[in-house]
Length: 114
Length: 114
Image (cartoon, rainbow over all chains, first blue to last red; front, side, top):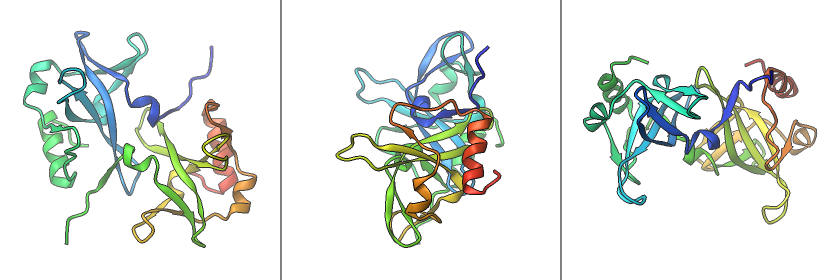
């Protein structure tokens, strides 16, 4: 058995597909939001929607909601598409100021407290 | 005073310049290596050397060695160029298997134990 590396490159995470538990592809990871002081990844930003790359939205997901599944070569999150419809989001190039309040809003939406 | 965001995008970190305490530019951040389980950024990978983008080397630096300095709009690390000459490195596209052993080798070189 090949030893599995404990770390992954940010460049490899970006672009990785995200599925829900039912196997629907929700989108792919566009970016990571990292706590400046601790270096902890707080949010993986899901790119979703749009057509031919235009007008896609960005959904920050708490990092710990993502589980990598080798079977689908992507992340699986416990969300259905309906839950994403009302989720905090922003347009491409409209990155919000991720102060504590914005992060809290995201965490509250998903019911997590990390 | 504008409230400062607590998080930073991986896309913004990538490409940020890295200086030593003497103000010499050492290179720029090419990539981040992230602990798969915890989401903690372990290493920022410094791109350094080469000519016109060819043959540059990659130096993984323990994340906590980097301090962002707004005055230079880049990271400052307590290293001089001579210390980088013997540091663990790899070529572009030759990402090593970052098992515990490789990480330990990097940490030992820089005298850190995170």
